Amino acid sequence: MHSAISSKDKEYIWHPFTSLVGSEPALPIIRAEGVYLYTEDERKILDGIASWWVNLHGHSHPKIAEAIYKQALTLEHIIFAGFTHKPATELAERLLAILPKNQKKVFYSDDGSTSCEVALKMALQYWYNQGIKKHKIIALEGAYHGDTFGAMSVGSRNPFNAPFQEKLFDVEFLPFPTCYQVGCCGGVRHSEKCVSVGQTIQKMEALAATGEIAAFIYEPLVQGAAGMRMYSVEILDKLLEIAKKHNILCIADEVMTGFGRTGKLFASEYCTHKPDMMCLSKGITGGFMALGATTCTEEVISVFRSPESSKTFYHGHSFTANPIACAAALASMDLLIHKDCIKAINQLEQSHIRFESKIAKHKAIKNVRSIGTILAIELKNNEESSYFNSIGKEVYQFFLEKDILLRPLGNIVYIMPPYVILEDELQRIYHAIEELLNQLV
Ligand SMILES: Cc1ncc(COP(=O)(O)O)c(C=O)c1O
Image 1 (spheres, rainbow, N blue to C red):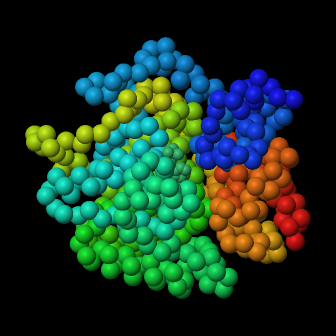
Image 2 (image 1 turned 30 degrees about the vertical axis):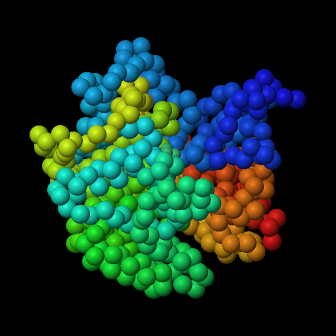
Image 3 (image 1 turned 90 degrees about the horizontal axis):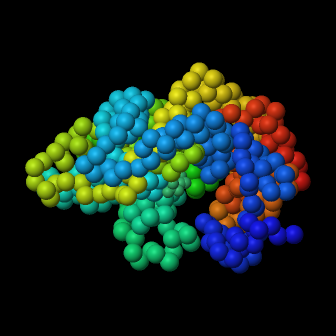
């Protein structure tokens, strides 16, 4: 039986990343609380992926909901050119207090893609303002920085952006520094002997030496959309060291890794070398409101401090620094830095590590890896590892039938839950995964 929501959805709505033909109908959700989504027909679905990696403290958290309500009654939104407000100033101050110390200013935007657009434009204009010809950008193969044109340009070339490829600007891609071959670096942290690592460093050195590189943009330690591909702190530090030596601006896209996902508040904390710019979104509001932020160093800003109008950064969005989104972010930050949340993140990390070693040798698995609150399992079948691996759809349905929301990236099943998930809820997900693995052999 089709509900009113379902039939209107079918008639009027075009969903993201969803084929208009052959896709399962979208599931109507009428409320969400904690780690659960409630359907119209009373199903209670465990959200194992924090609703596209945005939710930190559980759905409909009363503290964030209240902050939003109060803010909406006081100041819902104003133009952010020529005007300012407390939620934006307080959030900027508090963000900079928890980010690497070299970050000095916050530029607000709307989401993850726009936070990356802002960083790319800032980086290019940084050189333009100084009259220095540096136009090229380096990114990692497999990167995903969003779906706007600049963000797509610095992302992996793949079927998702094939229709637009002629319009994407040229980018230098480094081989991803982990090969996932059995017997080599094993896919995770200790990858010095991995062949692809050597190639990555060599290419970085050669490109950096040309003197033409404006910026290096990277997802620190984990490439999310590429399939939760992880690489080592040592390698990232080495790449950053080369970039710094050659005066290349380093842009850490922490849209997914930020706000505790990798076990530290920001993945950049693991590295010795700090980024010049950081892109933030997703977890920034605890998953309640759309908000993006790009932060940068004093060195970056200094080049824009000029009475010449041509040196101004002409970028903005109607909803820049929306007060309600900033209020949600402030409430989420209170929860995030509370000792209970830090403890929950640590416990989640430890549970993942235990489960990782429990299933590591399972015959249905090609590779299992984890960092912080993220656990990823690469399933073995006779197709290549990719988003288009046909097993993904079946696996999605397998979990959904058990009222668990996991949305595999092809043959990569991953868990990235809200931090408030309880141990027995996590065990329910682990058990379902084991059941799947046993079915696959
Ligand atoms: C690392 C990274 N950057 C940018 C984005 C784009 O964010 P949004 O979907 O909010 O535009 C994503 C989204 O998944 C991401 O994972």
